[in-house]
Image 1 (tube, rainbow, N blue to C red):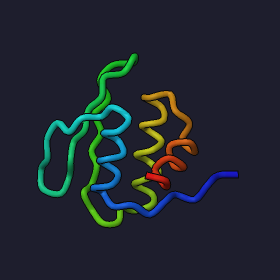
Image 2 (image 1 turned 45 degrees about the horizontal axis):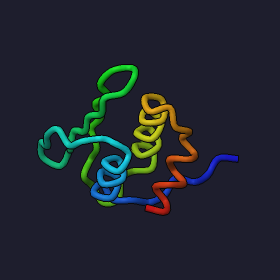
Image 3 (image 1 turned 120 degrees about the vertical axis):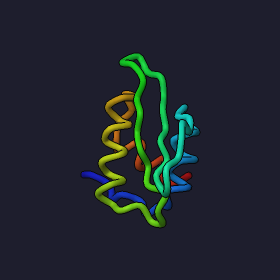
Image 4 (image 1 turned 135 degrees about the horizontal axis):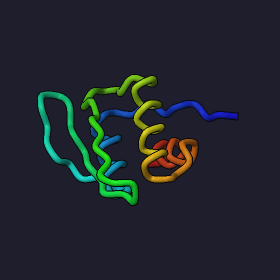
Length: 83
């Protein structure tokens, strides 16, 4: 059964993604662009620096990170909840 998405701020999500290898590339307004080099190429993702990040947006971000980093989405969600 799928776990519920945690309620997190954009700042927390950015710190979490940095802990798994993403780096802040730039910021425009309240949106922060992160990048990570993977086996499939450079993954660029934009994170809204909102408090809290909308659940649908968070789910989409974790889905994309899961695909690019080959980490299970539920595992990412569980790690983020503990972060």
